[in-house]
Image (cartoon, rainbow over all chains, first blue to last red; front, side, top):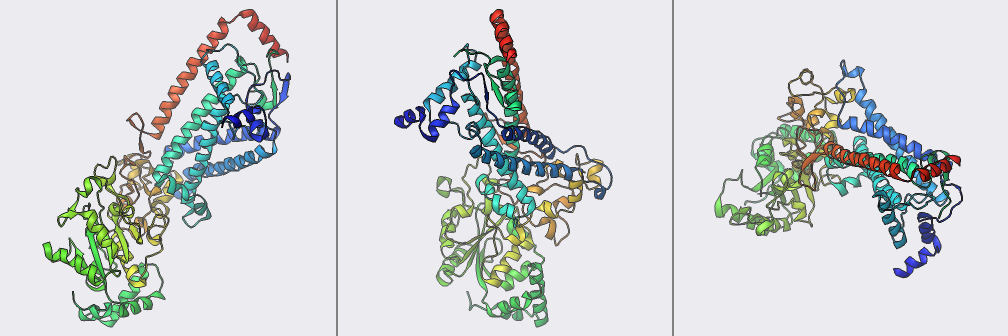
Length: 249
Length: 369
């Protein structure tokens, strides 16, 4: 294990490259093109989907006040569910596209899915970032992509929950499509893993809150880092360019 | 136990005409959803097959399954018990008692090994070597295993046998265990419900006797013909659900108008059962039609997914506090939000206290690029 860690930290092979791209850069160029256009497009589409899904999802759990009139003339709750299902499918397709981009894009594009948890150097820098947020370190390090703590948080609070959301969501959607539908053949196993349908609803619902909390932290940290760290954050996801504010190491 | 007779012989002995017999076969075919072509097949089976012995065991349960079973209208429970099968052992329905009754089990094992159907109502508690349920002086789990060994197929009556039901709800002190976790080498048909619908019970028995095999089962081992759809899928109040018309309390105008009970915690959308199609009491009504939401009694863990009158289930949090998903989520978001605000304030303070000149320099640099 120790040998492989050393080897990977010297930058050998695919795993080594992962560690290289996820850890500190001593003296980068003044600006680096990090997030390519397809990735930025995905980020904002994904953000939009999450906002719509959280609003419609919350309303499905706690429906708005009843509409009046004949049932045959109204389809309010039906439309809320329709939007939720449609946007959920857009989100899933967008994630598939994002996974494909992890293979096609630059080496920052697979950072989201592959935190180098085997690297002691990477964990050391996670700890350094924790100290930076706890006001115990004066100077943060420079990163071209995500910093290691951000990468870890993205993986645990975004990547895993978004997969849980998609699988539980599609399993619940499959129930509506019927147990003889291809949806149920593809996602019915979720009930074998998690148990009864009501519990799957609960998991799906709690999972929404994990994603909401992630969004809160994500936005705060992005704005804070934009102001306090040594690199640009918010504008990078718009223009794709990472700017470094000083030329110290 | 006398010489085994065919079903038809039993019918004729009881004075049932050929014409009535044919009517019964047609009705049964219709109630199983099989179509008219199957009526002659049912008749043929009844004329040639011997009555199948059925052993009906009762474990940890409330007998609501037996009570439900004897109220079946199509086919009548009396027809099933007296004509279709040979119900050799059943605490509730048999005439004999004591050692005589227990002897029937031994005889069945000797004479009909591998042929009889074992119907299990209730489940065995496994804690303390099964001492929480004693039948005939022995733990029920022993009797269950013994009788399961010689059965051709097993029917798990009700939520107790299928899912554990109330005695297996958290914290389950007796370790009440659904029978498929105790018996693993026999085909088990789960007929969950608390109790199951009478016509579903007799329908399953009729299917097994007629075709000599277990009915097509879903992923969880329930007969697809009765548990293939959710209550919600065939609920007559479904149009109100799609329209967004909900009862907000049990006595409001919307409840009187017959609006959807979703907000009142109705479990129809998560419950697989035939209530909204076959209904109860000979097709008179079912809970939602009577103005009460479904409590999901045929679903696993339905006691733990309470409260019954809330849309969101309570979750046991690691701190021992019960709260629903929104309370947990809002609470966590509140804590994180406060932490973010505190952290933002501390960050602003740190920045303000840092060397103003250096701060100004780095600021102009960052704006310069």
